Image 1: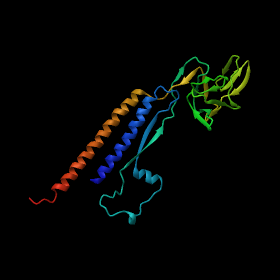
Image 2: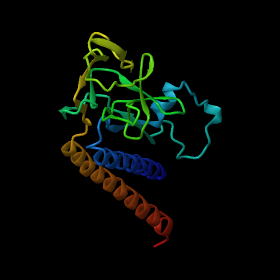
Image 3: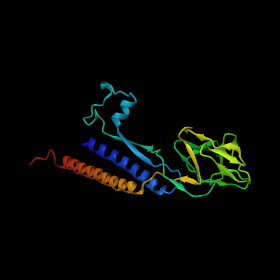
Image 4: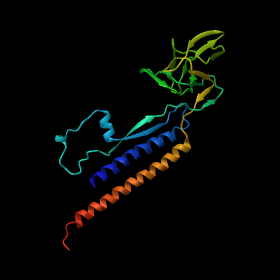
Length: 230
């Protein structure tokens, strides 16, 4: 009986985490380059088996509800790295990655990586993020000349027929990764899918609540009625 409380409560914790992640996905549905998160659940015993943790018989407590096969659920965040839709903007500073890889960004506190390509030019004509962090090329931060310029699909920054620099793509595949100028990659979030997931998740949470209520009522009767002499 106590085990049912443990199982239902761990399920509610997992559903709460999933609800938060779904809400975050919906909130970022219009964020360029955003990758949706999802919750992966597994039983406590599976986690222990993967980590090669054993429970010797002598170390198990004598309590009757000590689970030999634990049913508690562990949930963890997992990111869906699938490609988002490519949206044309016509702005030369906007860049989208088709395929694998990330733009390399100099944050001033180290290099960070992003798929969000809604860039701009700062006052010194450096290509940078909306927060002002510079986009890195193979020679360092990319500075665009006043003359007409373009970025080829291989990332080369070209002006007057000369290659100035090349966009640094980390984790990409030279054969399949392309950079599309005048476009951005949208998020890979489907609002319909997330809303359906949210409703399903709420139903699962409510089901676990009912298990806890039923277990509590049964325990109450056991305490108050079992053993009474008619």
